[in-house]
Image 1 (cartoon, helix red, strand yellow):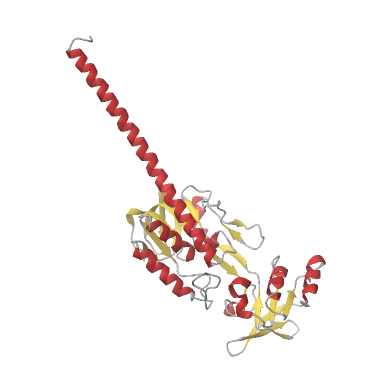
Image 2 (cartoon, rainbow, N blue to C red):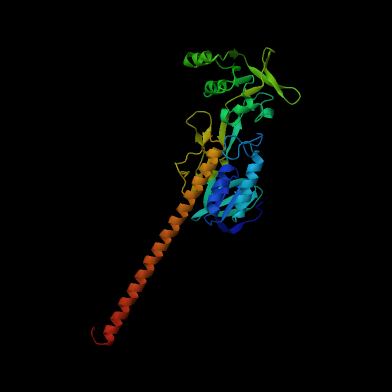
Length: 342
């Protein structure tokens, strides 16, 4: 953990040690950059049993994947420490990163990979089963709940789409409208065509027996037995510490969360700051987050190379001009000595 001010600084400080952050750090340390990764230790997929859809690492426990990544970054000379960033501010041409509890580090560039927070409906029992029987992504968890009795909670504009995706995996899917009006028009037609019944009435609890979800309890007391629950969370970027830089999350175009906007390379609107992974791409799985982090790391290295080239060219030109001026002066003095000029 960083407990004191580091005045020497780093080429890059990576804030967030998940797949995106470690992949970006790996690209940078392999380019011989000095890199510090600061990780708060709160990965979004921590409750999951395994990482899915990641070629060559299918089913690997999330903690094991991150441990391997940390070892790889450290193997090339990078530093990975535990800590929570409190603020990031301008410091001359670079940045000062202050940690909660004290300690400041300096960096020429920042890579923000802090991920997001899933905000679940305030229904007892859901949070406790999150990442196990309560899931959101058919590609992350769908195969694991195949052929089971699945309930889809109507939480937002993505819910009917989720029902369609999970109906691909099970013939027993029920849509819970909760307090909201039941789907109408084309949405209702789609559910009917898929054979997905719609239940009205508020859901008051997710019932758990012997450490296993058994169903959803409705306001009228009915228990609708379900083996798995699907819901679309409100996803909010962990980026409050960037406020002093004028960088704040904005509503995502999908309408179900907030993110940090970036260009195709991961560059934010603040010069010197890049972002990658779920903090900017709410739907990115581990593989996509890692790829985005690697791309951002390469772009940061290229940016630092360009900066050094500009400095080198300027110095070269300055040195050339000084040498030329000295040569001319020497020639004039020589001509004077020989009486050629007065």
